[in-house]
Image (cartoon, rainbow, N blue to C red; front, top):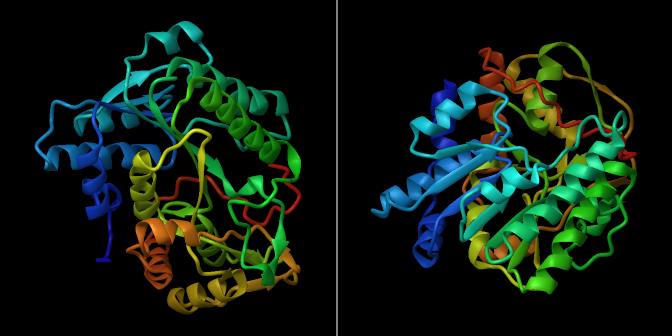
Length: 342
């Protein structure tokens, strides 16, 4: 990965289609819609689809990005890249019904942070919205963004939770995500809607993610808590590509896919590697617990191969970005959280 010095360069890189994305887009028909496109991944994912279609010579096929769009600049940026932006509150039934049809849906809407203060809103966003969307787009193909947090914490030696494991997470947020999956499964069976549950764990961008969080703590001379001693990560471009490629891996009942890196990343070792590159010694506190949220993503590797960006490349690029004052989204992952309270 070449050095990325500006946000424009970063977003251009994150939205560059992979060969696998181009192959998938060739096999699919119809328009595309990203629901909840205003978040951390939505803009570059929508741009990747648009760039792939344009590369194939299909500028007439629409890519719709749907969000509340609280940021006018984010909406304008997507529009400048040929994406049709639609402001919509997905809880507004009339507004949802008024959205255009689309054969291919990537559902990214949901709520995580603030759950402890307003659990009822988290449950509404993570279960009622899926029901409304599943009814509206019963004839579409839907990739549903979910999370590895639907699994319970697992032992470090286990190799990580697999798609066939029982779900049993702690806390309102993670349980509402199980609810989201159950709702979509119900409608998939009722309407024969092809769906895939995309259980993503820690997509990494230079502006946010586990590596960014640890680097920011080192930069600010804040302690790095290693009680949650391990994590899995994947570069955002690779996660975007896998999500798009899943559009032709659907089924009813829904298919399920863990998406992250195979490497078990030690938070302690991550801090040490970042500190060496940043010229600052990390302050480590805590002791690694015997359990963590870890995930076995072998199935995604079998389907799509090894991600293009390695862990070492992510660490090197993040260290450079943070040291040189690169922008932060200000959205910490709270990877240290073990009780499910966000």
